[in-house]
Length: 416
Image 1 (cartoon, rainbow, N blue to C red):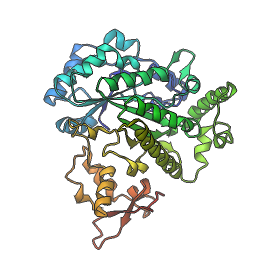
Image 2: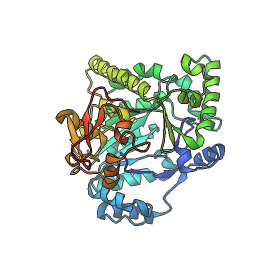
Image 3: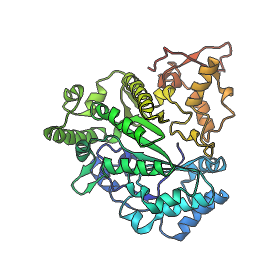
Protein backbone atom coordinates (compact mmCIF):
# COMPACT_ATOMS: atom_id res chain seq x y z
CA UNK A 1 0.00 0.00 0.00
CA UNK A 2 2.17 2.86 -1.26
CA UNK A 3 -0.52 5.59 -1.15
CA UNK A 4 0.06 6.99 2.33
CA UNK A 5 -0.55 10.11 4.38
CA UNK A 6 0.61 11.30 7.79
CA UNK A 7 -1.70 13.50 9.82
CA UNK A 8 1.05 14.53 12.26
CA UNK A 9 4.80 15.09 12.11
CA UNK A 10 7.06 12.83 14.15
CA UNK A 11 6.01 10.22 16.67
CA UNK A 12 5.51 10.14 20.46
CA UNK A 13 6.39 6.45 20.74
CA UNK A 14 9.75 5.11 21.80
CA UNK A 15 10.72 2.19 19.56
CA UNK A 16 14.48 1.78 19.19
CA UNK A 17 14.06 -0.33 16.04
CA UNK A 18 12.27 2.47 14.16
CA UNK A 19 13.62 3.31 10.68
CA UNK A 20 11.45 6.42 10.23
CA UNK A 21 13.89 9.02 11.68
CA UNK A 22 16.42 8.27 8.92
CA UNK A 23 13.83 9.28 6.29
CA UNK A 24 11.79 11.93 8.10
CA UNK A 25 14.60 13.79 9.90
CA UNK A 26 17.89 12.69 8.27
CA UNK A 27 21.14 13.59 10.01
CA UNK A 28 23.29 12.23 12.82
CA UNK A 29 21.46 9.43 14.58
CA UNK A 30 21.00 10.93 18.05
CA UNK A 31 19.89 14.30 16.69
CA UNK A 32 17.65 12.68 14.07
CA UNK A 33 16.05 10.40 16.65
CA UNK A 34 15.34 13.27 19.06
CA UNK A 35 13.93 15.50 16.31
CA UNK A 36 11.62 12.72 15.21
CA UNK A 37 10.28 12.39 18.75
CA UNK A 38 9.26 16.05 18.62
CA UNK A 39 5.64 15.15 17.92
CA UNK A 40 3.74 18.08 16.39
CA UNK A 41 0.78 19.08 14.27
CA UNK A 42 0.89 19.06 10.48
CA UNK A 43 -2.33 21.00 9.83
CA UNK A 44 -2.18 24.69 10.67
CA UNK A 45 -5.78 25.78 10.08
CA UNK A 46 -9.12 24.89 8.47
CA UNK A 47 -7.79 25.73 5.00
CA UNK A 48 -5.45 22.73 5.21
CA UNK A 49 -8.42 20.44 5.78
CA UNK A 50 -10.25 22.11 2.89
CA UNK A 51 -7.33 21.20 0.61
CA UNK A 52 -7.68 17.55 1.59
CA UNK A 53 -11.42 17.74 1.01
CA UNK A 54 -10.87 19.19 -2.48
CA UNK A 55 -8.26 16.55 -3.30
CA UNK A 56 -10.49 13.64 -2.30
CA UNK A 57 -13.79 14.99 -3.65
CA UNK A 58 -12.63 16.89 -6.75
CA UNK A 59 -9.15 15.59 -7.53
CA UNK A 60 -7.62 19.02 -6.89
CA UNK A 61 -4.36 17.95 -5.34
CA UNK A 62 -2.28 21.12 -5.62
CA UNK A 63 -0.89 22.08 -2.23
CA UNK A 64 -1.43 18.66 -0.66
CA UNK A 65 1.86 17.00 -1.69
CA UNK A 66 5.25 17.59 -3.27
CA UNK A 67 5.12 18.52 -6.96
CA UNK A 68 6.97 15.37 -7.98
CA UNK A 69 4.20 13.29 -6.37
CA UNK A 70 1.26 15.05 -8.01
CA UNK A 71 0.92 12.64 -10.95
CA UNK A 72 1.01 9.61 -8.65
CA UNK A 73 -1.51 11.13 -6.20
CA UNK A 74 -3.87 12.13 -9.01
CA UNK A 75 -3.87 8.59 -10.45
CA UNK A 76 -4.30 7.07 -7.00
CA UNK A 77 -7.35 9.18 -6.18
CA UNK A 78 -8.84 8.62 -9.64
CA UNK A 79 -8.58 4.85 -9.11
CA UNK A 80 -9.86 5.01 -5.52
CA UNK A 81 -6.55 3.57 -4.40
CA UNK A 82 -7.06 2.91 -0.65
CA UNK A 83 -5.26 5.55 1.42
CA UNK A 84 -3.15 4.38 4.36
CA UNK A 85 -3.20 6.83 7.26
CA UNK A 86 0.00 6.48 9.28
CA UNK A 87 3.29 5.85 7.50
CA UNK A 88 6.14 7.54 9.37
CA UNK A 89 4.04 9.12 12.09
CA UNK A 90 1.45 8.06 14.68
CA UNK A 91 -2.03 9.25 13.61
CA UNK A 92 -3.50 8.70 17.08
CA UNK A 93 -0.56 9.97 19.11
CA UNK A 94 -1.13 11.58 22.48
CA UNK A 95 -1.66 14.24 23.58
CA UNK A 96 -2.21 15.88 20.18
CA UNK A 97 -4.97 13.68 18.79
CA UNK A 98 -6.99 13.91 21.99
CA UNK A 99 -6.58 17.67 22.06
CA UNK A 100 -7.03 18.55 18.37
CA UNK A 101 -8.53 15.48 16.67
CA UNK A 102 -6.80 16.14 13.34
CA UNK A 103 -6.90 12.47 12.33
CA UNK A 104 -10.58 12.30 13.27
CA UNK A 105 -11.26 15.23 10.91
CA UNK A 106 -9.40 13.53 8.05
CA UNK A 107 -11.31 10.29 8.60
CA UNK A 108 -14.56 12.26 8.49
CA UNK A 109 -13.56 13.70 5.10
CA UNK A 110 -12.75 10.25 3.73
CA UNK A 111 -15.98 8.74 5.03
CA UNK A 112 -18.13 11.62 3.75
CA UNK A 113 -16.61 11.08 0.29
CA UNK A 114 -17.00 7.31 0.42
CA UNK A 115 -13.24 6.89 0.01
CA UNK A 116 -11.56 3.63 1.17
CA UNK A 117 -8.82 3.90 3.78
CA UNK A 118 -6.60 1.89 6.09
CA UNK A 119 -5.44 3.19 9.44
CA UNK A 120 -2.06 2.10 10.82
CA UNK A 121 -1.42 2.77 14.50
CA UNK A 122 0.06 1.57 17.78
CA UNK A 123 -2.44 3.58 19.81
CA UNK A 124 -5.43 2.02 21.64
CA UNK A 125 -7.17 5.40 21.24
CA UNK A 126 -8.62 4.09 17.99
CA UNK A 127 -10.68 1.53 19.92
CA UNK A 128 -12.42 4.11 22.13
CA UNK A 129 -16.16 4.73 21.53
CA UNK A 130 -15.77 8.03 19.63
CA UNK A 131 -13.51 6.47 16.99
CA UNK A 132 -15.27 3.10 16.88
CA UNK A 133 -18.59 4.81 16.13
CA UNK A 134 -16.96 6.83 13.35
CA UNK A 135 -15.32 3.78 11.78
CA UNK A 136 -18.55 1.78 11.95
CA UNK A 137 -20.26 4.43 9.81
CA UNK A 138 -18.41 3.14 6.72
CA UNK A 139 -17.65 -0.20 5.12
CA UNK A 140 -14.55 1.20 3.45
CA UNK A 141 -12.17 0.88 6.38
CA UNK A 142 -9.53 -1.50 7.68
CA UNK A 143 -7.48 -0.99 10.83
CA UNK A 144 -3.88 -2.12 11.22
CA UNK A 145 -2.39 -2.21 14.70
CA UNK A 146 1.35 -2.72 14.98
CA UNK A 147 2.36 -5.31 17.58
CA UNK A 148 5.58 -7.30 17.37
CA UNK A 149 5.44 -9.33 20.60
CA UNK A 150 3.31 -10.12 23.65
CA UNK A 151 6.43 -10.15 25.82
CA UNK A 152 5.92 -7.01 27.93
CA UNK A 153 9.33 -7.43 29.54
CA UNK A 154 11.02 -7.32 26.12
CA UNK A 155 8.93 -4.38 24.90
CA UNK A 156 9.81 -2.48 28.06
CA UNK A 157 13.38 -2.31 26.79
CA UNK A 158 13.05 -2.00 23.00
CA UNK A 159 9.95 0.22 22.90
CA UNK A 160 10.68 2.69 25.69
CA UNK A 161 13.03 5.51 26.59
CA UNK A 162 13.43 7.68 29.73
CA UNK A 163 10.89 10.26 28.57
CA UNK A 164 8.41 8.10 26.69
CA UNK A 165 6.70 4.74 26.33
CA UNK A 166 4.85 2.89 23.61
CA UNK A 167 1.39 1.49 24.52
CA UNK A 168 1.58 -1.96 26.13
CA UNK A 169 1.07 -5.16 24.17
CA UNK A 170 -1.98 -5.91 26.33
CA UNK A 171 -3.64 -2.60 25.43
CA UNK A 172 -3.01 -3.08 21.70
CA UNK A 173 -4.32 -6.64 21.77
CA UNK A 174 -7.43 -5.42 23.58
CA UNK A 175 -7.88 -2.70 20.94
CA UNK A 176 -7.77 -5.33 18.19
CA UNK A 177 -10.32 -7.40 20.10
CA UNK A 178 -12.73 -4.48 20.51
CA UNK A 179 -12.49 -3.49 16.85
CA UNK A 180 -12.94 -7.09 15.68
CA UNK A 181 -16.02 -7.53 17.87
CA UNK A 182 -17.46 -4.34 16.37
CA UNK A 183 -17.19 -5.86 12.89
CA UNK A 184 -14.26 -3.74 11.72
CA UNK A 185 -11.71 -5.50 9.49
CA UNK A 186 -8.59 -5.81 11.65
CA UNK A 187 -5.00 -6.42 10.64
CA UNK A 188 -1.97 -6.96 12.86
CA UNK A 189 1.31 -5.63 11.52
CA UNK A 190 4.10 -7.73 12.97
CA UNK A 191 6.66 -5.27 11.73
CA UNK A 192 9.44 -5.57 12.38
CA UNK A 193 10.09 -9.16 13.20
CA UNK A 194 13.51 -9.07 14.86
CA UNK A 195 15.39 -12.33 14.24
CA UNK A 196 16.69 -14.07 17.35
CA UNK A 197 14.66 -11.64 19.47
CA UNK A 198 10.92 -11.81 18.72
CA UNK A 199 10.65 -14.98 16.62
CA UNK A 200 10.36 -17.29 19.64
CA UNK A 201 7.14 -15.54 20.68
CA UNK A 202 5.47 -15.70 17.28
CA UNK A 203 3.34 -18.77 17.97
CA UNK A 204 1.81 -17.23 21.09
CA UNK A 205 1.14 -13.96 19.26
CA UNK A 206 -0.39 -15.58 16.18
CA UNK A 207 -2.69 -17.82 18.22
CA UNK A 208 -3.78 -14.86 20.37
CA UNK A 209 -4.67 -12.88 17.24
CA UNK A 210 -6.72 -15.75 15.81
CA UNK A 211 -8.55 -16.15 19.12
CA UNK A 212 -9.81 -12.54 19.14
CA UNK A 213 -10.91 -12.52 15.50
CA UNK A 214 -8.13 -10.61 13.72
CA UNK A 215 -8.62 -11.05 9.97
CA UNK A 216 -5.12 -10.63 8.54
CA UNK A 217 -1.46 -10.64 9.58
CA UNK A 218 1.44 -8.87 7.85
CA UNK A 219 4.94 -9.97 8.82
CA UNK A 220 8.09 -8.14 7.77
CA UNK A 221 11.64 -8.67 9.00
CA UNK A 222 13.56 -5.76 10.46
CA UNK A 223 15.58 -3.84 7.89
CA UNK A 224 18.28 -1.33 8.71
CA UNK A 225 18.55 2.15 7.18
CA UNK A 226 22.17 2.42 6.05
CA UNK A 227 22.40 6.01 7.26
CA UNK A 228 21.77 4.97 10.88
CA UNK A 229 22.39 1.21 10.77
CA UNK A 230 25.39 1.02 13.11
CA UNK A 231 24.10 3.58 15.60
CA UNK A 232 20.58 2.16 15.61
CA UNK A 233 21.87 -1.37 16.16
CA UNK A 234 24.14 -0.17 18.96
CA UNK A 235 21.13 1.39 20.72
CA UNK A 236 19.22 -1.84 20.21
CA UNK A 237 22.19 -3.81 21.52
CA UNK A 238 22.21 -1.71 24.70
CA UNK A 239 18.48 -2.32 25.14
CA UNK A 240 18.88 -6.07 24.53
CA UNK A 241 21.85 -6.26 26.92
CA UNK A 242 19.69 -4.69 29.63
CA UNK A 243 16.84 -7.03 28.77
CA UNK A 244 19.15 -10.03 29.21
CA UNK A 245 20.40 -8.70 32.55
CA UNK A 246 16.77 -8.64 33.65
CA UNK A 247 16.06 -12.25 32.82
CA UNK A 248 15.36 -11.98 29.10
CA UNK A 249 16.59 -14.51 26.55
CA UNK A 250 18.10 -13.87 23.12
CA UNK A 251 18.90 -16.46 20.44
CA UNK A 252 22.36 -18.05 20.55
CA UNK A 253 23.28 -16.82 17.07
CA UNK A 254 22.74 -13.17 17.95
CA UNK A 255 24.54 -13.57 21.28
CA UNK A 256 27.60 -14.70 19.34
CA UNK A 257 27.55 -11.23 17.78
CA UNK A 258 27.22 -9.57 21.19
CA UNK A 259 23.51 -8.81 20.58
CA UNK A 260 24.46 -6.50 17.70
CA UNK A 261 22.07 -6.95 14.79
CA UNK A 262 24.25 -4.98 12.37
CA UNK A 263 27.08 -7.52 12.49
CA UNK A 264 24.64 -10.42 12.67
CA UNK A 265 22.92 -9.29 9.46
CA UNK A 266 26.21 -8.72 7.66
CA UNK A 267 27.37 -12.24 8.55
CA UNK A 268 25.02 -13.82 5.98
CA UNK A 269 26.26 -13.99 2.41
CA UNK A 270 22.72 -13.51 1.09
CA UNK A 271 21.91 -10.37 3.06
CA UNK A 272 21.10 -7.50 0.73
CA UNK A 273 22.08 -3.84 0.59
CA UNK A 274 19.77 -1.90 -1.70
CA UNK A 275 17.93 1.45 -1.82
CA UNK A 276 19.67 2.71 1.30
CA UNK A 277 18.70 -0.33 3.36
CA UNK A 278 20.26 -3.50 4.72
CA UNK A 279 18.01 -6.56 4.55
CA UNK A 280 18.27 -9.85 6.42
CA UNK A 281 19.22 -13.17 4.79
CA UNK A 282 16.74 -14.07 2.04
CA UNK A 283 16.96 -17.79 2.77
CA UNK A 284 16.39 -17.27 6.48
CA UNK A 285 13.41 -15.04 5.76
CA UNK A 286 11.98 -17.71 3.46
CA UNK A 287 12.46 -20.49 6.02
CA UNK A 288 10.84 -18.45 8.79
CA UNK A 289 7.91 -17.16 6.75
CA UNK A 290 6.92 -20.72 5.82
CA UNK A 291 6.87 -21.62 9.52
CA UNK A 292 4.76 -18.57 10.38
CA UNK A 293 2.29 -19.41 7.61
CA UNK A 294 1.91 -22.89 9.07
CA UNK A 295 1.33 -21.38 12.52
CA UNK A 296 -1.47 -19.26 11.06
CA UNK A 297 -3.06 -22.37 9.53
CA UNK A 298 -2.85 -24.17 12.88
CA UNK A 299 -4.34 -21.19 14.72
CA UNK A 300 -7.20 -21.00 12.22
CA UNK A 301 -7.99 -24.67 12.83
CA UNK A 302 -7.76 -24.20 16.60
CA UNK A 303 -10.16 -21.24 16.73
CA UNK A 304 -12.18 -21.81 13.56
CA UNK A 305 -10.94 -18.44 12.32
CA UNK A 306 -10.21 -17.17 8.82
CA UNK A 307 -7.03 -15.17 9.35
CA UNK A 308 -4.95 -14.63 6.20
CA UNK A 309 -1.27 -13.86 5.69
CA UNK A 310 0.75 -11.27 3.79
CA UNK A 311 4.53 -11.04 3.60
CA UNK A 312 5.99 -7.58 4.03
CA UNK A 313 9.18 -8.93 2.48
CA UNK A 314 8.92 -8.85 -1.30
CA UNK A 315 11.02 -11.97 -1.80
CA UNK A 316 8.42 -14.18 -0.07
CA UNK A 317 5.25 -12.77 -1.62
CA UNK A 318 4.69 -16.19 -3.19
CA UNK A 319 3.47 -17.29 0.25
CA UNK A 320 0.74 -14.64 0.46
CA UNK A 321 -2.77 -15.98 0.93
CA UNK A 322 -4.23 -12.74 -0.44
CA UNK A 323 -3.52 -10.80 -3.62
CA UNK A 324 -2.63 -7.67 -1.64
CA UNK A 325 -0.10 -7.96 1.19
CA UNK A 326 -2.38 -5.88 3.46
CA UNK A 327 -5.25 -8.28 2.82
CA UNK A 328 -7.62 -5.53 1.67
CA UNK A 329 -8.60 -7.50 -1.44
CA UNK A 330 -10.84 -9.42 0.98
CA UNK A 331 -12.98 -6.27 1.23
CA UNK A 332 -15.32 -5.68 -1.75
CA UNK A 333 -15.01 -1.88 -1.51
CA UNK A 334 -11.19 -1.89 -1.78
CA UNK A 335 -10.76 -2.89 -5.41
CA UNK A 336 -8.69 0.18 -6.32
CA UNK A 337 -5.38 -1.06 -4.91
CA UNK A 338 -2.44 -1.55 -7.29
CA UNK A 339 -2.65 -4.85 -9.15
CA UNK A 340 0.20 -4.53 -11.64
CA UNK A 341 2.71 -5.88 -9.14
CA UNK A 342 5.19 -8.70 -8.59
CA UNK A 343 2.45 -10.44 -6.60
CA UNK A 344 0.24 -10.43 -9.70
CA UNK A 345 3.19 -11.71 -11.76
CA UNK A 346 3.51 -14.67 -9.40
CA UNK A 347 -0.20 -15.46 -9.61
CA UNK A 348 -0.28 -15.37 -13.42
CA UNK A 349 3.01 -17.25 -13.80
CA UNK A 350 1.81 -20.00 -11.46
CA UNK A 351 -1.49 -20.34 -13.33
CA UNK A 352 -0.11 -20.09 -16.87
CA UNK A 353 3.45 -21.31 -16.19
CA UNK A 354 4.76 -18.06 -17.68
CA UNK A 355 4.09 -14.33 -17.70
CA UNK A 356 4.86 -11.52 -20.17
CA UNK A 357 4.57 -7.82 -19.46
CA UNK A 358 1.49 -7.53 -21.66
CA UNK A 359 -0.25 -10.04 -19.36
CA UNK A 360 -0.35 -7.48 -16.55
CA UNK A 361 0.00 -4.19 -18.45
CA UNK A 362 -3.73 -3.46 -18.22
CA UNK A 363 -3.78 -3.68 -14.45
CA UNK A 364 -3.49 -0.48 -12.42
CA UNK A 365 -0.08 0.76 -11.32
CA UNK A 366 0.43 4.47 -10.73
CA UNK A 367 4.12 4.04 -11.58
CA UNK A 368 3.65 1.94 -14.71
CA UNK A 369 6.68 3.39 -16.54
CA UNK A 370 8.95 2.51 -13.62
CA UNK A 371 7.45 -0.97 -13.34
CA UNK A 372 8.09 -1.52 -17.05
CA UNK A 373 11.73 -0.53 -16.52
CA UNK A 374 12.04 -2.93 -13.58
CA UNK A 375 10.54 -5.72 -15.69
CA UNK A 376 13.51 -5.68 -18.07
CA UNK A 377 16.15 -4.32 -15.69
CA UNK A 378 19.31 -6.34 -15.09
CA UNK A 379 21.67 -6.15 -12.14
CA UNK A 380 25.45 -6.22 -11.97
CA UNK A 381 25.88 -5.29 -15.62
CA UNK A 382 24.65 -8.21 -17.69
CA UNK A 383 23.74 -10.28 -14.64
CA UNK A 384 20.36 -11.73 -13.66
CA UNK A 385 17.18 -9.77 -14.13
CA UNK A 386 16.25 -7.54 -11.19
CA UNK A 387 12.98 -9.36 -10.44
CA UNK A 388 14.47 -12.85 -10.39
CA UNK A 389 17.22 -11.44 -8.20
CA UNK A 390 14.60 -10.17 -5.72
CA UNK A 391 11.98 -12.88 -5.25
CA UNK A 392 11.62 -16.61 -4.83
CA UNK A 393 9.83 -18.70 -7.49
CA UNK A 394 10.26 -16.35 -10.48
CA UNK A 395 12.91 -17.00 -13.12
CA UNK A 396 13.67 -15.24 -16.39
CA UNK A 397 13.46 -17.46 -19.46
CA UNK A 398 14.98 -16.41 -22.81
CA UNK A 399 12.64 -16.00 -25.78
CA UNK A 400 13.15 -15.79 -29.53
CA UNK A 401 12.38 -12.07 -29.32
CA UNK A 402 15.19 -10.30 -27.48
CA UNK A 403 12.86 -7.38 -26.74
CA UNK A 404 10.33 -9.56 -24.92
CA UNK A 405 11.28 -10.51 -21.38
CA UNK A 406 9.44 -13.55 -20.04
CA UNK A 407 9.33 -14.98 -16.52
CA UNK A 408 8.29 -18.47 -15.49
CA UNK A 409 7.16 -19.88 -12.16
CA UNK A 410 9.88 -22.17 -10.86
CA UNK A 411 9.62 -23.88 -7.45
CA UNK A 412 13.41 -24.01 -7.27
CA UNK A 413 14.10 -20.39 -8.22
CA UNK A 414 16.10 -18.65 -5.48
CA UNK A 415 17.11 -14.95 -5.48
CA UNK A 416 20.81 -14.06 -5.75
